[in-house]
Image (cartoon, rainbow, N blue to C red; front, side):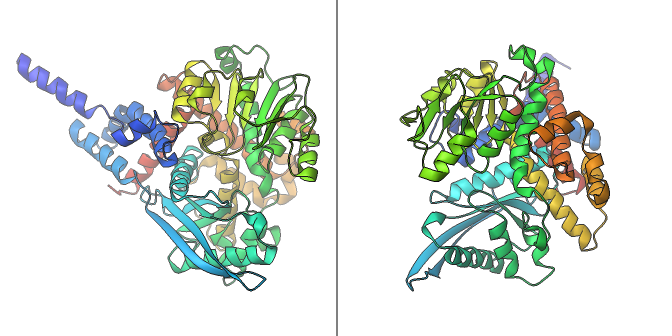
Length: 517
């Protein structure tokens, strides 16, 4: 072959062995105010950029007759098909208040990844005034890749009702939630087979019970998870998000190789200092678990105030003060919130347990914590993430660390399927099958919790139940896999991109197994 032919082959191979992040998502990297959906997709497509040659090679191993160019085109086709939400619905309906007046209510629901080989979407329902269409799209996309990262064979979804729930009575909220679910059902959502709702911000088992009550017996068991026990739910479901965060952090802070890479000498949580943003239903138990393990809180940040005390803060006293007075602004040493200076204070661990895009590039380069825990979805922007990783910070990303509730939801869904006669789950991850079998052996519940962490669980006032056992083991096993992927792709400690690569590989395998494309 002549020089010209060799050059053409080189250029052709280079073209089909590389992937470029679409311009829309490339631009979002530089914009702190970019749409959350675009920012989630920047992380996703950055992972594609790194793993594309491996995806092509894996496909050729599966189908040896494919040429390199054809395999690359097939991979690109799957990427394009999975790039956008399958559907986004915007519902509006009137609701009669107790005083007789009527109010128009608006809600959203998005589904993502239904052509991934996972035919059912699972995702949260939240009630907040700032709910937007883009937010629902982003959280649906994130939940898809979160599920795939954790070995959960479900696509992603997310929904929201655009209200401040504190402005309505319980009866009015019940009317709103039931009407919202009914509107979704009429339009093909919330049916239990293609769409499952789980609780999110300002929504809990009460709202899930309201939804199940409007549908016939049997049908209602599959359409929501996070239900009360009497309605087919599982015990301690509401604590699983916080326990997942704790177990993920505990796993990595006891890994000596990881600690060496971030220049942290002592393993374990004992005497580690932490700052936490958000002491709500997620952050409060996380803080309690950390303190019970010997960690010391030195900072608390809420929406209107922050407290920093290097000598230590009793977070439970702060929570009680906030519950009694509606704010922490009058707590001892509290200062009004004017910026993110508290993120720049000395501590070992920074926990972000509030809302999206709270840590941006202007603050990231001043963070002193060696470990940053993204407990809230989308709390760190792409630029901030890159800055943190480049400064050898260990970022425990949302795609992994905040997946405890998703694991609990998946197990509740599988248990419901079993009670309805479905027992064959051929592609179920081995660990989930073991956990599922353990659930049925309920008389042995206390014996199945791993001995290595039993004392830790007890000290954190966690129940020795199967669900806690499940969360602990899934977080540990997935943590091992993320470390392996980081080494394989030379990512150093970029666990977020490792998580997306793991999710991508899982979804592409599923697509090819189902002979979709």
